[in-house]
Image (tube, rainbow, N blue to C red; front, side):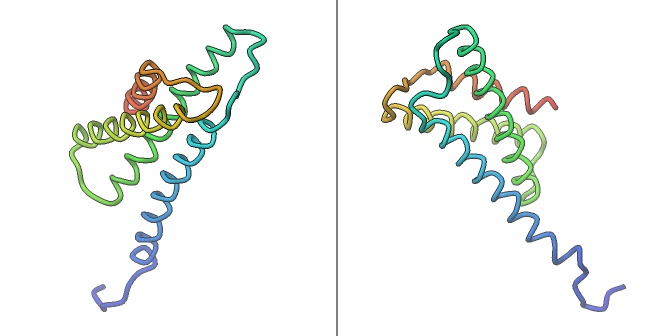
Length: 128
């Protein structure tokens, strides 16, 4: 019925978009917090510490990819292939900024391999 009144769905859509962008920003904050820690895993078992670090990059940046692409999809219309490219570019750029940030954190090092793991996480998430 075209009465000119907004439906509940029409009123919720802008709020839902906003919430999805808050998830992106909040998750970026979570990644930033972890990157700001001098030492996340005690080096008692180097293999375990390395495995957790690798999985951390893949999982955390995979989640960032999912949050970002969902927020973009709700905000704008992209072809799926272009949305995937945009999501991977975003993950790559945030991964680079994350490594740059770690350069200034005592006890942390910068690794281009970590950026590769970040992008891998985004790519794997794109296949879900």
